[in-house]
Length: 167
Image 1 (cartoon, helix red, strand yellow):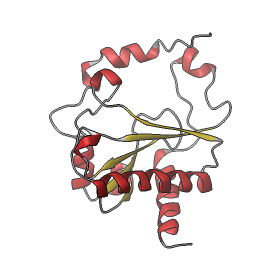
Image 2 (image 1 turned 30 degrees about the vertical axis):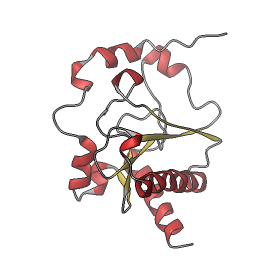
Image 3 (image 1 turned 90 degrees about the vertical axis):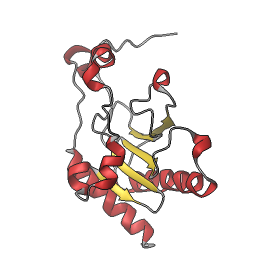
Image 4 (image 1 turned 180 degrees about the vertical axis):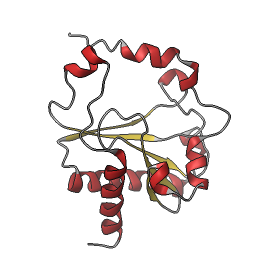
């Protein structure tokens, strides 16, 4: 078995400034109206999609319930279904616009599982391409993202709107 070491992550893990402050950034994004500024891709009745501000890849998005909930058991059946439908809709939009070769999709429940915002559960949806990560992360402590987040946000928002309109 080979091991991939990511030493640049330790600085992030140890840095108190990276831990959530008193407020929830997802709830703040819901309360705001400037979707471009907050990288909001889609506002559904029960779910929200935002681009990750610290992405692993272009298009790395977060899908969450609109209610501030920490556990899957806290979701009612309508929210659970809507959340999964929103993940499915997002992957369809990504397939159309970003043309990934695969996806990493998952959620981290609790701080020790890697949840950066443990009070508001959210799925990570990360589009993947062969060769999308390279030596830059190890040697230069740098993620190379080929598109600016506001451009990606607009492309995904447009694709989701078309999907919802049946186009």
